[in-house]
Length: 481
Image (cartoon, rainbow, N blue to C red; front, side, top):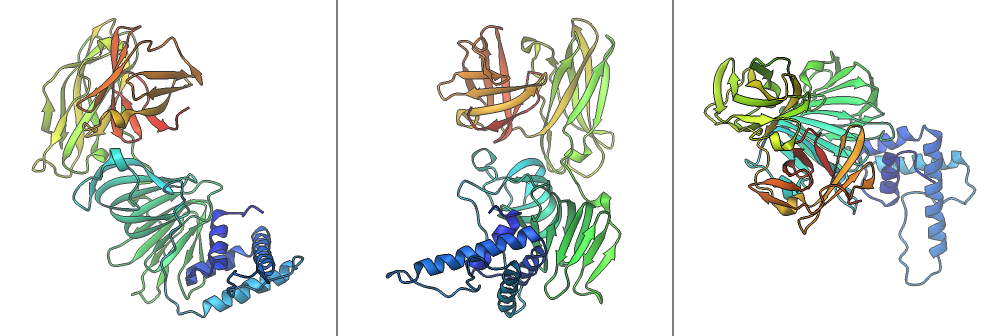
């Protein structure tokens, strides 16, 4: 029988395998048993366990171990199964009321979650991990500033805001030591939970936020749906949309209702793309608010990309300002346009050194002017933080997927320097014929013989490829077709 939820299977397996169960685990399993399908699943698992013990009886050389649950006949009534469950839980609950750490059960096929977004991150250890070679392989994430987005295999998305210390426990759980977190849990992934020092938050299909203060006080709020708060020794609390609680063991009332502060949490990674437009031949100064993207000193690199219109466009006077004062500028003049052969130096470098960074209103400014082909054009600026310039050929090898014109496209960079191109699921043998690619200074250069031009690509991280001189959305790494 298929378990109604991954959480139920994990808890039942934990019980039957005689692994340690905390008071929170026990309380959660009791709650799940109020559902008929969950109770039926538990009964069937207990029955199988009992049948296995009976089947092994009399076989020499097999060690028999006492079980924490009662062995039932095959046709046991559900009521008897429920009674057995509570017998087992009663047995377990006599242990001291100690909040025990969950058991990590990492699947054999890889980590339960991967890093899918980084913005303005400064790692607590003082240096960035090797995102090209080992992105997402760290179970613990500790950052001083910035944002990290994690995506679990179930589709659960966790957004962390520094300073924060968070650990990936298993495919249905995480642990928050300190900092702010927003978790979006899609349908089918209910039961995802986050532990903190003195309790557990269990999702019931929702979007919720947590803020664990350095002194241990913990805020919990619900943006959508509902969650349960499990505190050892207390009744389970249910929070619904727009409700929030404060857990503070030093207060007279350890758990109390508070207003939900929506403004203090970052619910999604902020956009890096900004739209620009030209409608005449007169030079136009454009300016974009990038405050949400500049969290610290570092090297910032805007990429100016053409998207529509007949005109090729020059880009110059690219600079970063804080509160209206110029902090740094790139003196080069670049160009962007419809054809890759018309794109030149459209990736700019803006270093914000340690002594130049301060909080404030940061803006990106540039001057755009049509070059040829008319006076109208629209495009975007992708504002990146230190595009990886240490990438090698090995970092690009593999298959990358993106969408353009409503169709799925794939590019497969092969170890021999050639490339396969798939359009709409079909291998397009007419494109990139006899073309080759190579990497220099972290940039991939792809020859396009039929068009007599070169495409350039850069990596934002291990799994995100940026088309520097082509008007395509970013590509993501996928399994080979």
